[in-house]
Image: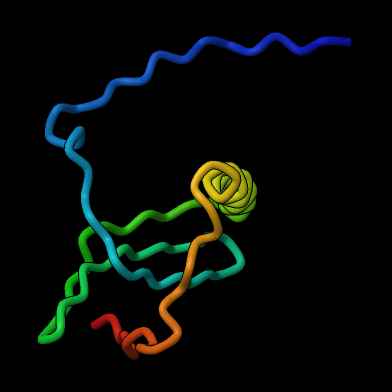
Length: 94
């Protein structure tokens, strides 16, 4: 049995098209939702640039999609190296 998928038209507001840069993130969860804070951290300070709140089911789909895309990226461009010299900062969101 095949399922028909409804076509959904997505709008992409111009103000969002340039994206927001993030070099760190904080993930938290409750039984009902996951909260992803995307941060820009500099040597002196940091700030939350975006907060995304999603259901656990959607978080799991995102996790799968990120894993698949990271795998494809590494096949094309080589293994992603993580900086072992400098640990990530201890981030506390206020």
